[in-house]
Amino acid sequence: MRIAAFPKGYLTEMIVDRTLSVFDWIERAGSLGVDGLELHSGFFWSGGSEDEVSRIGDALDAASFEMPMLCASPDLTHPDSDQRAREFDVEVEMIRVASTLGGPGTSCRLVSGQAHPGVSIDQGLEWVHDAIERLIPIARELDVVLAIENHYKASTWQYPEFAQRKEVFLRLLDGIAERAHFGVQFDPSNAIVAGEDSADFLEAVIDRVVTMQASDRFLASGTTLDDLRQADGTIGYSPALMHGVIGRGLNDYDRIFATLVGAGYDGWISIEDGVNGMDEMRQSAEFLRDARERWFGGSTAVRVRSRELALLAE
Image 1 (cartoon, rainbow, N blue to C red):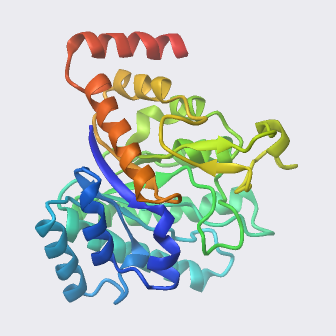
Image 2 (image 1 turned 180 degrees about the vertical axis):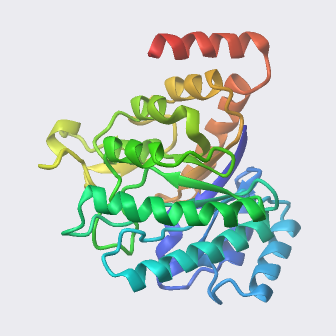
């Protein structure tokens, strides 16, 4: 298992306000002790031009970071066909950027899109399946892995994720046969936000997981998950569901790691945080380094025990 970091806590400064550049972030991340940095399509202020991508690649190399994952958020369920086409084109461009910066096997995230009013589940899935099937040959040609995330809501979106519910997400996966260049980016905290048990969600998709994001959530004093569930069964971005250091919150990481190792997963896990500052990100990185030693260290005994725990969890 290798560890990356993603600056969720700085997305407004980096994407909306543009007061913190990707070069600033690369320098700042040097204190985390991670192997790579997950980037976002919004970090490319020049739109991913050849010169910009080259300069970012040079900065990553100089800081001894890999770029294993690129985060993009195409709205493939938009009711306007012209807008869907534009969203598709942006994803294609991000696949190209991911290939350039990360090389063979790099993952490029995609999501289904927003839950636009008036778009039925069947119609949305038809659009998403069509887009993914057209993206797969491009990803295959560039040796990039498309990683669809169990997402909740992009910061710039008006509506939550179309496929936030597990049953819809699983229907989406079942409609795509490709395994080599398409899989799942698992986010345990997004499962919680969508009203699911994160370890249960992982077990439902473990055979398709190609990358993982890691964070944790904490309930404000005096609240319960049932209190926070909205009428549709989700929790949403409630102010009573707070960010914090990985491994100390609602996610059962022992069960999550047991499931991952039991399935043979040994890929990238990216810290998706920084909401409360760099100190918590450093603590989260330390937690994942300890987890790597405990769960992914290569010991036969550890791997056998992990498989036993995964079976017990079923």
